Structures are given as C-alpha cells and as structure tokens.
Length: 158
Image (cartoon, rainbow, N blue to C red; front, top):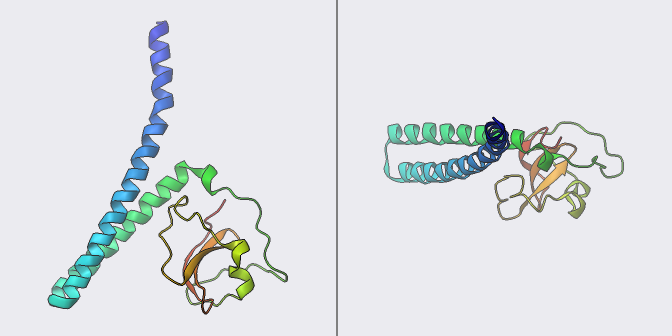
C-alpha cells in the first residue's frame, strides 16, 4: 500500500512537467509549419493560379491559428514567466489601447521598454529595424525608424 501511494504521488508530480515539454515542442512544430506554409504561399503566388494561392492562404491562416493556440497553452502553463513588475511609462504616460499603425513617441520605445529576451516569451524574432516593446501589460512590435506599431499582443504580461 505504501509503495502504491508513493507511485501515485510521483505520477501526479511528473505529469505537469511532461505537459510543459510537450507544449513547448508543439509551439516549435507549429512555428515550423507556419514558415513552411509561408514558403508554399510565395511559391503559389509566383507559379500557381488563383486557386493555388487561395488554398495556400487558407493553409497559412490555419497554421497561424494553431500556433496562436499553442502559444496560449504555453503561456497558461508558465504564468510565472509572464509576471512582471508594474509598468512605469514615460512622463505624462496615460494608457490607451493601441492598434497596428499607431505611432509611438520615441520615449515609449527607448531602451528602458525594450523586450530583449523575446524568445523567453515565445515571441517571434523582430524584423530588421523593429523591436518588441512593453507598453503597459501589452507588448508591441514597433518600427524604430518611424515609431509605427507593426503588431500588438494585448494583456501579454500579468
């Protein structure tokens, strides 16, 4: 009876670890699938007809949706990674939700607010001339040359 109880306790403590590893693997596989579907779309745009392009766009959209779901599962199981201290914005800061195309002042995407360890948060690497920036509890991909928001994840940090 004692051995059975110890085995049951060991099993309950190992299950969450296995679930986290599986979730991280699923996120990586989904990201690979998105990249493959992007290549397929570019190929269809160059060499295919309208139906090929439409099918490739649909596949890419489905892959992105699956990746987003995997990322949310990872975030839910690793809440401590996304817990950050309170945000202190630049002088005169007043939070308003932003959307793609919004223009930030340079004070909002300075070194103080940059998210350098984007891979820890499972964010995609920023493109050339862009950086991930914390804005309140949101994270935004900002074009550094003009301050335009390229992508936003609302409620990113707890």
